[in-house]
Length: 128
Length: 222
Image (cartoon, rainbow over all chains, first blue to last red; front, side):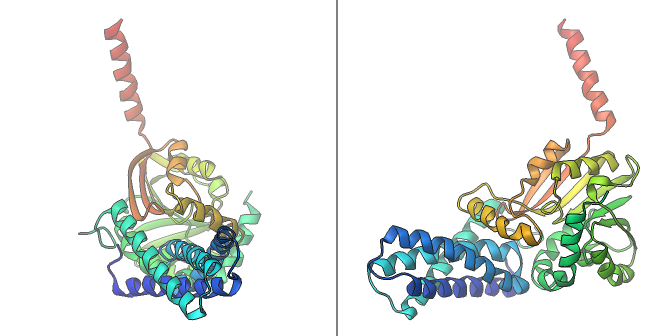
């Protein structure tokens, strides 16, 4: 896991913001009453594509793959969850943003756990 | 002949390269690169130099030969090369067609290079040719992932990113093996996506010794 505060805060900001934005978009695009699987699939693709573009902007400040990979998972999952939710019962844009932001936070934590499992508890540079 | 399509792509990317990579990616990767490049010794080939952002991670006082396919990138690297405490000689060269003699280098370093080389196994084979027997290859590379859903998103990313620059879905460790290198170590920097690969070109002595052991074994068993 990244130990430098600047990058940790950058990762948190990136994933919460992208999750929230995709959540708001899902509320806007999907209407209640849609087939929930269609809503999920559509928002998965839209979420993944838009989060990649957003991640490029955040990546200027916080890194390359370390930003893009979690951001795409956050955007994809936020789109799927909020899209399905909106298809079943109506959400406000604020609710979409909150749910999306939480999904982004959860996805980032999953990535951190997976990263720790793959490379072990080593700070940047591998000197521990 | 230089791959003009790839050269034009990177010439175009040169003006925005420092903005896109200098603040975020390079600062994030700096400790890892400093540790990797700290192994530099002997006659070193570095590719691809780009705008010279990696020079900040070079240990002082080395004598380094660097190449890049893009003249625009090398032009922008000049100031950083001049500031370096050792010596860096940079040339415009395509990795597929290296103009170096066989077995010229003790070590070769790559930094986010083989995400962009159009024919990676051919490029790595060319590197093997110019490396001395027993010489070392040190790579800092981002690759595809073998884990779902990361592999899916990396393939998806590549559709877009390949148009502008690098592929996000390369299987560089396999490519290094295919080029005939012996993998010494693979260290994950971020997930299984960013990694440090250490490989070696087998020395003639090792081959001779292996053959000798094999011959002795055959003689003993017959």
